[in-house]
Image (cartoon, rainbow, N blue to C red):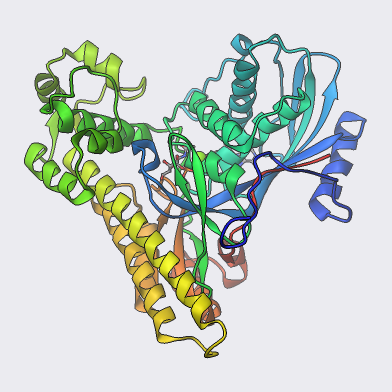
Length: 485
Ligand code: ADP
Ligand code: NG1
Ligand code: MG
């Protein structure tokens, strides 16, 4: 047990298949109808909402997500051939079969418009598993997928799907991996889709615990439970704009802009002898500076609004081909202009907001304990905690909107109408659409949801009031991946 009562367990739990569970029963029924036999086990992986720490996981900085109740459930059975037979409960996702006898056999390509097919995410998980086992595969799988995480909405439906596929494959192969190892493997596997993700989504998918958010740190991967204030809830609201992150180069552009900024920041240092890719947090470590000193350094060394590719080549003393090969991804080599100052300022500012957020949560947990035998009713310090945390969330959104340029007009509108009720919120996940997460005092949750329904969904988006329920919900930290067998 950890200090706040959250259980620490290293392996993905295996529990017996639940009885009278509507989704499991439905999956069983459709599995039998589709494949003519029963599933032998199920895998469940949750989506997540990131409370704070956006676009900094791939820069090596800690993040603070929690798992959602919404999830991907896979029903699985083994076959005697080496084929994957993939079906989805939602018929907008087409059937797909493929021989998975070796890792080289799995070619993950998008459609003609560059958008990944849904089954590519499953293939990422299987390919990662095959590569990890490094042996010819003799096991075939029948899989039926059921997901209820809003897709392309910043709640990590993609990683839940990749991770569920990878876990299913490994469990079928009797491979034993602990939660940290499999989270790291799934983060690597999802990069086959084309985006250079940082690993937050897969980390929380496996390391989440009920009732706590997790402070996720890297190298080595670790998760420390964070107790959230008891007098407030997190509310998630969909902006009604979807953004598939692997269909554009917006995400990878930010990743490589951060890489280039890191390289230039340490270029002047004597330790910068080779040209290997480093993260902004590694740059900070090498330079031995605080986050606020790094912010000053950005103003000093990266003063320009925009850097051309040739300017960057000059600063780093490399030619364009070397720059492409060393730092850029396949879908960013053609870019000619980069914003380095703005991206680095966001990252250092956001990293420091994560630390502040965590500190305030820790102080609040201590004072909640101290007051638990004392006064009933909500003490003044609890209100202050929610307001301090909320302000950090608003600052995070403003930085993502202005410095990282990954917001969307609907997200900004949601943030603005929330402020009218004195509620702070921010975009969550990669952005360019998707959801906001708000921190709302418990006694205002119903009023807040109602206000969003009227002001955003009905008035701004012209949706009928009776159709808006699915788009906005209050949520609590949920548990991580699980196998039912
Ligand atoms: P997110 O923010 O939800 O992770 P991504 O753009 O990374 O968004 O991934 C979304 C993609 O994941 C969808 O376009 C779809 O291809 C796939 N996906 C998500 N949920 C499901 C599901 N239940 N069944 C099949 N594919 C899904
Ligand atoms: P979503 O919104 O789930 O696609 C992405 C990345 C995270 C992280 C966030 C931004 C993947 C799989 N996920 O999440 O690693 O960088 O954006 O904080 O790439
Ligand atoms: Mg995703």
